[in-house]
Amino acid sequence: MNILIVHDQKLPVFTYGGTERVIWSLAKELHAMGHQVSFLLPKGSSCDFASVYVWDPTRDINEQIPDHIDVVHFQKDPGVEIKKPFVVTIHGNGNEHKYIPSNYIFVSKDHAARHGSENFVYNGLDWDDYAKPNFNIKRTHFHFLGNAAWRVKNIKGAIDIIKQTPKEELAVLGGVRFNVKMGIRFTFSPRVKFYGMVGGQHKFELLNHSKGLIFPVLWPEPFGLAITESLFYGCPVFGTPNGSLPELISSEYGYLSHDPADLVEAIAHVDSYDRKKCHEYARDVFNSRVMAEKYYAKYLVSQ
Image (cartoon, rainbow, N blue to C red):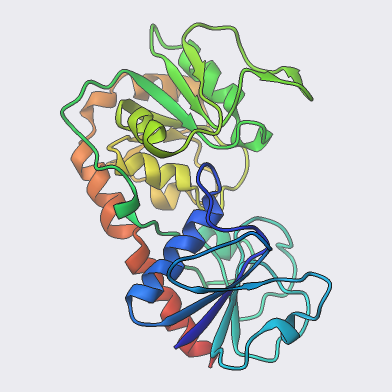
């Protein structure tokens, strides 16, 4: 099948870019499955396994879709009638009361249900792109993973939870202590360390040395790559039961509560979780091959 993936951000990415890493993993897996994959992306993008066409936002999108394409996979609502068979993945929240066509795909069961749909595919990642976890090393801290500047991710709540523990430390991956626009937003606590938008080997090492993910989100999280990345490194998840979290995190893989005191108590028992089981769950359920196979089934239906 000739598949065109359309996105309005450059690819590849090397640090945060959660959605972009999912798209890249999907394309690479579809290619490995024998499909012909192409991208329509902003200028400056590149790919060594797929053709890249430069997206021009000033032109009709239909004019930019090559004739040989069988199905187009948009990463947001194109907003116009598309002449080729197509699907759309909705990655974020919004328009929950809008009519949703059957070829629009969400990223969790809860995400779909809140938009009046049952159509979803879990995000997957190519775990071969990640350093293998080591379950024998000492775990020294907990971590927060996400864009800390986004208030709904609730870095303040994560810090408050850690400060209520006797001596646990928090590594913040995705934020800085000082923010020029927002002033001194966080804390001077020596038990909280900020690493910015860290990526690559440094990120893997921080995750592999972590005891668990602190994830007290304030919004209905559509999916949460921070969850699956953390689980891959054997980190149970301690968060709020918002959005997709209850369907992703059972009692085997973490603890969910709206009460910070409950989360503090659960953190005290972090060693009761089976780190290898957390890893195997992420590896087997949220991988790019599973995701690609499910999307391919959606492509067939769209024909």
